[in-house]
Length: 598
Image 1 (cartoon, rainbow, N blue to C red):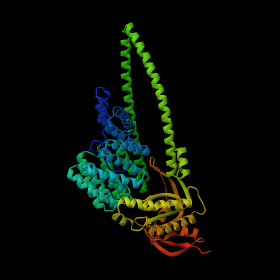
Image 2 (tube, one colour; image 1 turned 90 degrees about the vertical axis):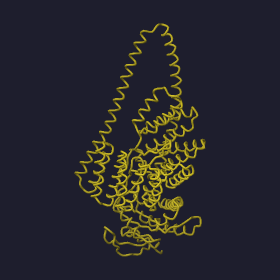
Image 3 (tube, rainbow, N blue to C red; image 1 turned 180 degrees about the vertical axis):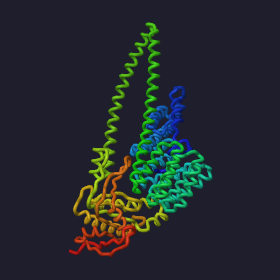
Image 4 (cartoon, one colour; image 1 turned 90 degrees about the horizontal axis):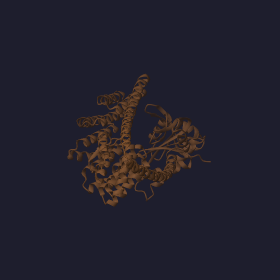
């Protein structure tokens, strides 16, 4: 889970965990009292939307705030409404609508000539583009926001924006870049004596050190973070930090430490009654036991996870039923009181009541007409958005997979007996990233990866994903073919040719050398995620393809024995011998020198 600080519209800061539902409910009672001035109503509505944790309720109150602020001409509150609406949509996973709302906020901030508001909107846009993995826009908007905060001397939000940019690099598994920004924001928090933001900074540094394999430094920073957060009573992020550390050690197969961190997270969640975190911790323990081969323990913890998860759902349902019953009883009492009063009314009052009833019927007819018109407009908008969503889904997933997802709401994992997998990696990319600006670095990667996309499309191959500076694609899925290995090697040779030509292209700011590795074999393919869909493949074939890339050399295509057997009649291949591979022993490897002479 991403752990970051969020800018507050009033200039203070909050974290993604600190919405106060009790405060919001008390403010709702004040708002519904009907005794507030128009400006006070706007202020209360803004605070309600800010403190509610439920995105659907945030949308309801932010929309009300938007209508009232627009009607009264208060652009500052209109800006707040668009920002809160965007936050709710982002929380629900409706990223395209969240972008629309934030861009409206940008427009309002420009009308207000308010640079600070503009920087807040830019920060929000960067976060949404982060969810879309649009790295170029993430860096651009964060950089613009940081520069504006610096100019207006908003030190706190300046430090928060820097912290969040570092956290973004942490999500991209770029710990060195992340630490570069954390080391700028941390001293600012310390100078301002803001302990909780400093705790998040220390925790994030710990996660970065963990990614670098510096476990001692990681634990030292996270311990300091946990100590400050415990003093502040902010326990939810503590459980998240501990779970993150558990994942780090699990990936390294250091199971003792992985279980230790997971158990500490579970104990803390139980101690403070954090039911959602207890549920997460049970699921984490179940996953760890499953990965270590203890099926019975994994099942036991999974049952506990289901029980706690269901109890949270049931508690919410019971509370909702209690609210409905209370409202029903109040309505019944009021109806009986009105009936009693009506029986005591004179003929004159009945006359006025009839006139009022007729007026209400007229108003109701007008309201129904307007509602019908509103419904027509809403349906048109929904249809337009559905078309946009379908187009976006087709861009993210293979067409057959996208169709299955739309029809059944899920995608079954499939096994393919023969698939060719390719990995590329740029030589000395990490060293280059330290001396080149982030904007230039991301632009350069985009230049290469767009060309790679065109090449694999040409041969009917499927792009799987990019991981930092690594590019991964596969052939032979989602529709099996007989010549996927040959097509993949052809694509690899064209990629090498493009990279070589790029070195002489004067329009590029810098160039790289590339290594390529290819392997063929069975894989399992499917869709992961429920909000941010991702088509991925798994299996030993993928791991061996990655090893082929690691043991390749600059400007060379290194293939396995399995791939060689399928392409040897088409390409001139150079046997490299048996090369020792960690955890796999000796493996036959071949360099592809080009096509066989006819």
